[in-house]
View 1 (spheres, rainbow, N blue to C red):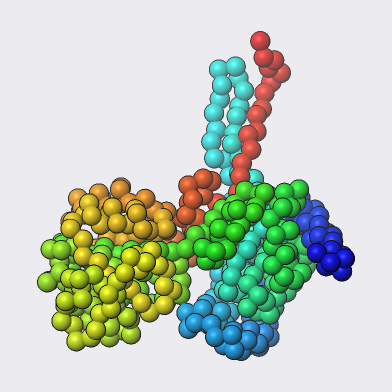
View 2 (view 1 turned 30 degrees about the vertical axis):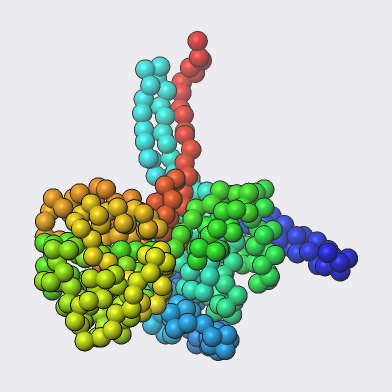
Amino acid sequence: MTAETAVLRDDLVSEMNDLGRAARAAAAELAMAGPEQRNDALKAAAEALRDQSDKIIAANAVDMAAAEAKGLSAAMLDRLLLNSDRVEAMAEGLEAIADFPDPLGRVLEERSRPNGLQIAKVAVPLGVIGIIYESRPNVTADAGGLCLKSGNAAILRGGSESANSSSAILECLQAGLRKAGLPEAALQRLPTTDRAAVGIMLTMSEYIDLIVPRGGRGLIERVQQESRIPVMAHLDGLCHTYIHGDADRKMATDIAVNAKMRRTGICGATETLLVDRSAVESHLPDVLKALVSAGCEIRGDETVQAMDIGASVKEAVAQDWDTEYLDSIISVKVVDGLDDAVSHINQHGSHHTEAIVTEDQTAAQAFLNRVDAAIVIHNASTQYADGGEFGMGAEIGISTGKLHARGPVGADQLTSYKYLVRGKGQVRP
């Protein structure tokens, strides 16, 4: 490291520490704010998003042009794109978050002890949350809104490809904070797209209480390896849909196409279709033809390759069963019953979202019980893996771990708790 580089890094460390100190102070003030004040900030931020919609879309156009020049895939460009409908959806998401019950102060448990002590377990903010995400600029609004609702300050680090869009969105969130009389430092973003800033952020345990990474496997693994702060991981979405032998044929086709093709670039998109051997002749041709008609490339095992569907099927190799395509590609495998399907999913899935299509309630219940995933679905598309669809207003991500929170992470999941103990002079013998 040259002397000049060392100085630059020292300057960045100093800037990051200033950011952390401001966030910590803002978190203390935010935790004391009442729910009305936090909700006012959310509603004012939604109003600012609508007022600044043209500015946000213009900033996004700069990001899109740069992304296209870099050769980003169609799926990644779709993640990055903002238009008037998507800006409106962000605004509506903030208003939905504001309308939710206050997550703070909830009494989670209450008990009275024989000695007269009254003990209550009460929800409180986590403090300062560091959120690292990639190309989807709407995460800026969702994550910022959920942190604000739950009384947490947030330090945001969006992907470099969405820097202009995220900055314009954050300005609206900070305008909402100012209008409600809350500190602007409650929602901040890293001052640079330099990857070194992320490395520094992951060591700032004095200021940050939780790191939430949201992106590809490379990002998640880096954060988990380098962080000195607890991590709530949003791992890749290697999701499966299993068509059981007793599935309704039309339902199976509709769900398979929607689960794969509605939006191919989201983490809830199905990447592997499993079909029961007993459903190969009755169900599989219609499903494959519908997928091909929707523009999907099929990669299949020997049985699938032998199907006459009027289109070529590529050979699925071992790597396909472990690939999150985020594109119009699906791997298709024939399995020998429920046990084989569950075994394949538990071996190759990312513990995100898995679905079964069947009219057999016993088989459905067995699948729901035995599949190891944050979200397990019966007779619906995996694309419902979304906090908004779960009635949370929005989500900060889908937690694929098993500690603290699992599945869609909304405002309630961004709280911790403390015990409040009330006595009448008791002393312990």
